[in-house]
Image (cartoon, rainbow over all chains, first blue to last red):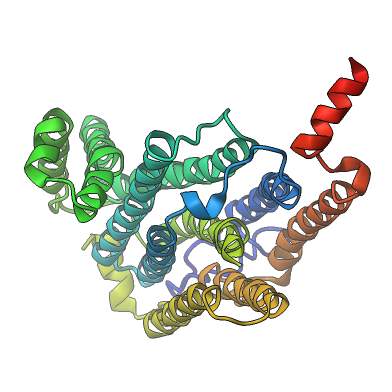
Amino acid sequence: MSSPAATGHIDHHHDHTTATGIPNKKLLWWAFLASDCMFFGALISTHLVYRLNPPPGNAVPTQIFNIELTSFSTFILLMSSLLMALAVNAIQRGNIRSTRTMLLGTMFFGCIFLGGQVFEFTHFVEVKKMTLSNSIFGSTFYTLTGTHGTHVAIGVLLLGMMYVRTFKPASGGGLMLNFLHLLAVAVTFGVAFIWFVPGMIEVIYGASFPELLRHHALPFAAGIAGLVALIALGRARGAVEFGEKNAIDVEAIGLYWHFVDIVWIIIFTAVYLLEYL
Amino acid sequence: MSAPATTAAAAGHHEPSKFHFYIQIAMILSVITGVEVVLVYLPIVKWFVVTALCTLSAVKFMFVIFFFMHLRWDKVFCTILFFIGLVLAGGTMWALLHIFGADAAKPLTAAALETARLAVA
């Protein structure tokens, strides 16, 4: 990436030290995302092939889907993309506090999306009796949306690592503290998308909140402990190494995050909306 | 805020803020998503809804890659690189849908499957 010039100005879009004029990290991510397009292209077309020519005994998607929940998840993922764009905008202006807030917001919205998917999968298997192996539709649907969900989960982890990195002290060291911080991020957001968000969706659909707390007491306790540690470790600890010069790192993670968003834009239309025609 | 950031901020050499611009883009994307969901429930001819849904998805896709992913402001090579992947993916989808859309590739119905089994037996 370009180093700060004598004027202190950093050009975030061009790097004059590389042959292409593009920062190497950015080029790497674009090349990876281009290859990931082909990966998702294959998964989406496999799903569509079997939807256009359904074999005997296939599941009926409109009797299984919950379009309200999926539309809400789509909106949440779009808003997480907004927060990610604002995080990149903040770090390009050297505003670390705002960058951290936006990164946390993006992770939280990502967890709401993942929680919605956990609820959806659980509901499909337990109530609608659609498993990975009892119909072609189930196989292609779970493979496609599950792969996308895995991408989102990896994105949340990458964002968590970037968030923790913003606290690295300028004086060096602090490795153990950063490890604990990352552990707190992983526990908090893990509990959020595996238990808390699906539980809250169940409450919205009529389940009892005290019953939910009783059933998942242990993970919720772990989540609260993780949240307390996250808040405690997130307090200002003096000068940090992270700054505007690291904008390319945040932007690179941002590219990945926006990519999972655009893949969902296609999945939402091709897999969900077109079924209702 | 960290010391380096404060120093840089004091220098006043920053990327211009796109805060309001991003908010406007997000609002447009939300409205398009709302329109998509409403469209499938409207009593309109199927071909029109399919065309509209595909167009709206493409518009959302372009908004995200060109504005949120900064392709609009980056070197054109990034756009070319990404579109190579996109065109290959689109071509693969088109080819697969046509290959498996052929009559010989279609799965048998339950009745035809039973007839075929009996014929083999």
